[in-house]
Length: 330
Image (cartoon, rainbow, N blue to C red; front, side):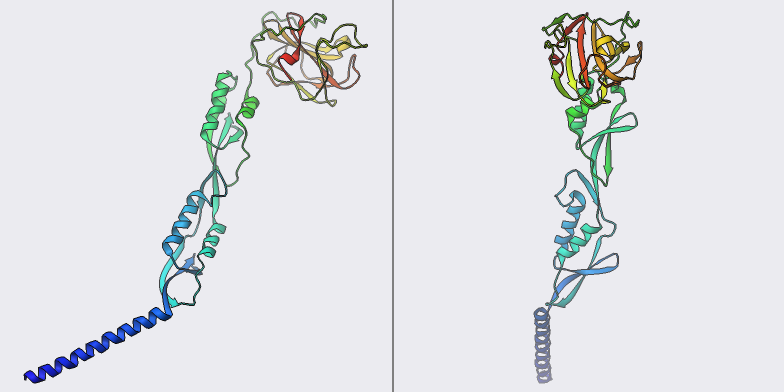
C-alpha cells in the first residue's frame, strides 16, 4: 500500500513539473512574440494603438486645459469625443501611433479664448487680455472724472476667436469724455474777438485738451509773413479738404459762421475765459448756442478766408489773448 502511494506521488510530481514547464514555455513564447498594448478608438472608430495609456491621456488632459502652449489667453479646449482604451496582446511588430492619436484629438478640439471686454453701456468698446489691465482702464477713467464712467463696465468673455487687444492708454484716450461744464453768461450774438494780442506764457487752462485732428504743422504760433501784418495768433495744420475737425474740449459754441480772414469758423467757449477757434473750414456742423462734448465733430477742413491751401487754423485764447496751442497740444 505504501509502495503504491509513493509511486502515485512520483507520477503526480512528474506531471506537475511537466505542466509547470509547459506553462513557462507558453509564457516565454507569448512574451517573445506578443506584447500588451492598448487598442484606441474615438467615437467607435479605431484610430490605432498606444503603448502607454496613462501618458497619452495625461497629455490629452493637459491640452484640454491649456491648449498646446503655442497660443495665449486659452481658457479651455472642448473635445466632443474622448479616446477609449482596450488592453490586448498583439504581435510585437505592431507599431504604436500615440503622436497620431494626439494629433486627431487636436484636430477635433475647439479652442475657447478668455479675455475681457470694456463696455460702454451695451456696446463692446475694447478688449484686453487680463482683468488687471481692464481695472487699470476703469481706474484711469475714474481719475479723469470721465463723463461716461457710470456706463463703463468690465465683462469676462469666452469666444472661439481671439480678439485684437488694445493698449491701456489708447483705450483710456478713446473712451474718455470730458464733462460738459455749464458756461455762464456766454455771448452767442455772433461777435468774435479777433484781437492780435498774443502771449508766449503758458497759463494753466484747468481743462484737458485733445488734438482736433491729425495733420502737418505748416505755420507756427507767432510766425510772421508777407501775408499778414501781425504775428500769427494760432497754429496752422494742413490736411485734406473735408477732414473732420473735433472739439478740443467740452463747451458751448459761441460762433459758427463766416468771419473775414478766418473764413468759415467755429468758436467754442470752455468756461473760465478759455476759448478755442477753428478757422478756414469748408463745412460747419454746429450752431451758436449748441453745447458740444470733447471729441464731437464740429467742422471740416477747408480753404476759406485768407488761406493758400486746405488747413485748420487753431487758436487758444484766454480772456481774448491768444496763447501758443503747442504748449497744450501737438
